[in-house]
Length: 518
Image 1: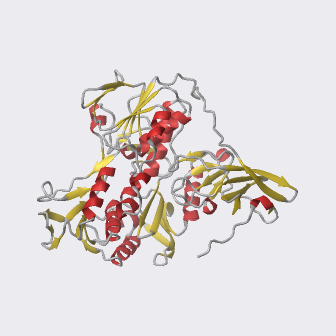
Image 2: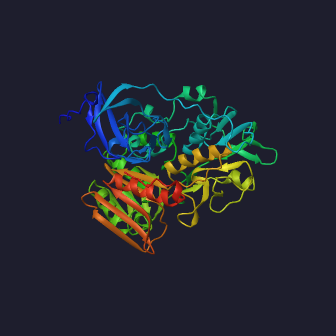
């Protein structure tokens, strides 16, 4: 199909009919550019999100911020600066000139490198050093933010992983399917850590935290002193307790190495059992099915994902998988595997080359417990993500934080939430006193169908579906006492963005709200 010819912004765009908050896609010297209007001001920025290449013209403008429709990364229209993950890089800008009733996009501008403050807003002396335990989404976002905010002290990331921070969501999706090259998976190049003076220590597990002496020790005996500490230890898979599971081919997917191993096994595999109908389990099922492998999913519930997305969406997901040959054994569990045959709880057996366990994860709390931090199914933090020990913060899958919108403390295992918490924790390490109030967001993509979920609903009394699941065009609302706590959308990215923005605005004082969401 021939790509439509885009308007040349160098020839000018009429202002008449260009609404406030509107955007139009065009080109300047062969590059795709988005021209946006906010009030009487016009902005020209790059057309694609640097995260996954999302079309920004289909996004949402809030104030002078532009949000990506795919995964809700946020950019400044004024400077191009990336304001919120999952993107880490800015978008380019062009000079805009208004002549009478037309707007012209001129030359491309040099990157606007913001000179960060060197002194915390609070006026307190910044910590002499920051240690981050964990090499995942929250840890990298924190290290990156510390440097963006002008912190010039020592930053050390200690990770038990053997790989530098990588794009974990892709491990169960396109990478496992075999369509994403390996060099796409690292979030940053090796040069990034050197240039920003981030000491990345891999293959190292922390064995003890001495909160009073401000020191940690890793298993090989090395010690690191810290002025401030961030616990971003993430979560680990719940082990599958089955007969033969420890000695035969049962695999988990949490790390880059895990995904590589599964991909290698898939090259010769013909039939696989996936234990668990969680997001990770179903994404693995979809990716392996796309490689021509026969998949059997074994799970105890009535429908996959029913406890998260409701009965109707669960039924839709099941039909989607069944259309690709996946066989479901719902209401059952896996009891044994001998390397060739899986035994189910009702006595049925299924031949399988190997088993993938996707029965959930649990927060990694060993070092937090050893440090005698306050725990409650996670590390308890205040609105600034600080733990019960002053100067020690937590972010990501391990953190349980107070969320005023939902009226309870929550712990959420979502990639974007972890990155945003890492950002906020870093700012508060520097004394910014910024409350974490981002609305939880996650996405899953299976067989080319993307479900975007924003909010938090661990229980509900009604589910409303606007549109059609089968036509992959709908908004699913989860309500409790007539209050909408969360929505899931298919094919309605702007609806998802608007609901997120409205939830965020409800948490701010009226004087600070952006009343115009375009």
